[in-house]
Length: 244
Image (cartoon, rainbow, N blue to C red; front, side, top):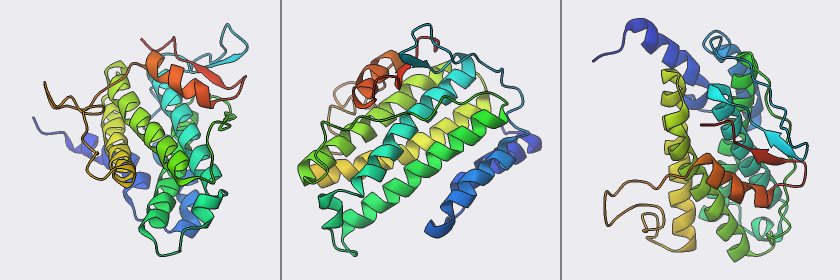
């Protein structure tokens, strides 16, 4: 069944900040402008209390806002990782024209844009975004290629599985469309990183159920949070119990 013209128009306006070519010098301007593009479209969201009963945890909330905050938390983590990566000896040792440097630069810009997109969307709901999370990357050696790419692989695979697993908890059709578009980008990230680690591993059995349905593996928010929390400092670990 075809979409009505108004639905097509809303989707086009909502996704515009993700689709237009973005110059690297001005990507923050585009990311910030997302609030204006989403203000009218997200007015149906309910505000959520993000305070966890455990003061040591950050409760993402429930309903659609909870899922958006959950995605925002994961994008914060990925953006922080690629930001930190750029200060390490491995990244700084790459030549300006190397494929690895260009890939890592693109992933950095994508993840920062995704982070700002979700923050603007939640604010425009109107709802309250979770706080800025503090990462803990003490187990990652940013001077070592294997450590950096291994961590990047883990983060990208986790992000794809997280979006796949959270889709069923989204009740607003437009949000589901956007999540599907963002996870397709995250899957491209994962494929690129996996190929840098081990060529041809982008569809290995640890991410695709090759023997049965040949579909991407998904993970429940509770499972994803257990892994994500190992890379978040005390006071920044996320509580996703409201997503159900």
